[in-house]
Image (spheres, rainbow, N blue to C red):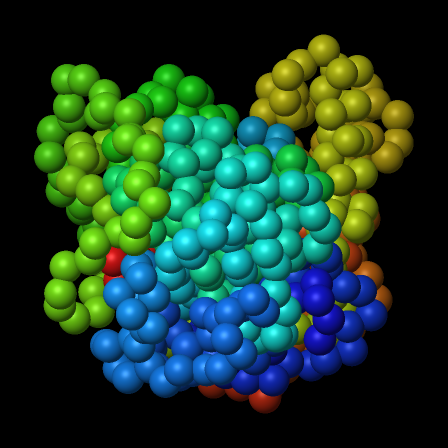
Amino acid sequence: MTDGQVAGGGGARTAGAASAGSGSPSRQEPGDLGGPGELGGPDELDGPDELDGPVDAPRRSRVRRGRPAGRGGWGAVTAVAFGPGRVNLVGEHTDYNDGLCLPFAIELGVTVRARPSLDGMMRVHAVDIGSHDVFPASVPPRAEGWRSFARGVVALLTEAGYPVRPARLAVTGTLPRGAGLSSSAALEVALALALLAHSGHDEPDRRQLARLLSRVENEWVGARTGLLDQTASLFGRPGHALCLDIQALAADVAANPAAGVAAGQVPTGDQAPVGAPAPDPAVAPAPGPPPASAPPPAPAAPSARAVPRPPGRWQVGAGRTGGGPAAVPAGVEAVRLDLGRWRLVTVDSGVRHAIAASGYNTRRAECARACELLGISSLREADPDAPGRLPEPLGRRVRHVLAENERVRGAVAALRAGDLPELGRVLDASHASLRDLYDVSVPEVEETVARLRDLGAAGARMVGGGFGGSVLALFPPGRRPPADAMRVVPGGPGRLLRR
């Protein structure tokens, strides 16, 4: 492991427990979050307390279940937050093209614990790799690698009107590192929720929070990602995938800067961004209070003292720290992911992808150039004949995006109809398009896909930005996934474990 890895396990047989990954990190992501996790999952709060940074006394205190130790009142834990990773069922490289995606949050993720810091400095301890960062909370300077995440979150929260109280943060996790399961968004979500609670702020609108955390990736990390990962991590719902219409979601964010959105409150049929023939009748929207007539007041600046916390047990909640009104975001629809005896698994290809350093940004630039030549603002507006009017490789890139949007619609229809063999065919078609039209595969990924198909997978495709990472496969009953496979199931959203 290197300094470029913050938190995460190397893999697991089921999403929720860490295990060793396949190794062979031939590519390393600067912001990758890897290493054996100290926490077995979001609700397991045992283990060594690692909040002491290099300037603090170099000793470790013990943490008993539900009662973390602190050195005096100022050293008490003020917040614990969890950010889940995600698997994208289908809809790859469509989010930054205002397209459609079908991700789901998983049970693996990143956990952040916060304590006060009295000298105005932020102290971040990446527990799993034994690495630290120290920077002023008031004006975080730029940094590279994993340090850019915490600094970017602090800077952009403050810019958005949520000044961050100096804190000592411990980061642990269970996500396989560099495997295309969005360890970076998991870290951003956990950091933001922990820092908001630690600083005494109510949680802002999750649509706006997703946009802010996407800016962390774009402006601080150097990865020109879209809204897919942060939205999946913030709005995950157990038993469901989320069909995201990024165009509608972005418009809703712009039109509703002050509306409150609680975790998990997503539509399940009232808004149908994928043009599906019928809503899912088995799912009801989460209830919520009526919209407020006026936006909530701006948060007050925090004092220098630690946030008071009520006595009680560790709490596992939806992640909101205030009781503001809840609204339903346009462009997000929950789709029941009922697999019966079928299984979705991921297998690590052994190649570490690096979003900020790979061809990901190049692909996004190619799509922007295609839009410029076509005279449109995004590829969502491209007509079916558009690829033929473009030079290569731009034509291939546009063909992939247009077809991938249709595959998202097909996957939603297959899930609603219970047609899992068809879902497998959609996965296969998506992989072929990513390989042949978007040129983001590598030999190790192709070998992994072939191995899974030989074992009887009904469909398999690369997940994440490409250039390595994991392969997602759908196995029917009677077919056994390989020993190094990790079963993935939809989990809940990013949330506070304690405040």
